[in-house]
Amino acid sequence: MLDQEDKEDLQYLLIKLFPEQDVFKNYEPTERTLELYIKALKANMFCNMAVTYLATELAAAGANFAYRGKMKGVVKKILKKIKKHYQENNFAFVMCDTIIKFQYLTAFSITLNGYIDTKRD
Image (cartoon, rainbow, N blue to C red; front, side):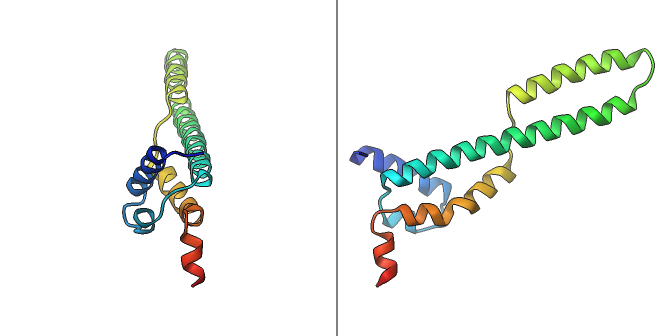
């Protein structure tokens, strides 16, 4: 069960996430909202990991073709370290943030306390 402070904190996060939506200012979040928020965070983390992996692999593949001869071994070692670093420390992509916000906006709204009741009137 969410206490009042938890509800206020979650409402603050939702208002910051969706500043253009008044619905988050007018209705309190519920436990279901918190569950959905955690799910959205996990989805955002997965998206960032996937895009980071894709970007580092594509960058490394291009660089591998560019070097031939004695330098190729050195370049491969450097690229391996760079890929490892960025794949362990994921980038935060605006694209992922935007997709997750768009995907979860309606679901967040529906979980707010009293939101559905006002839409039926």
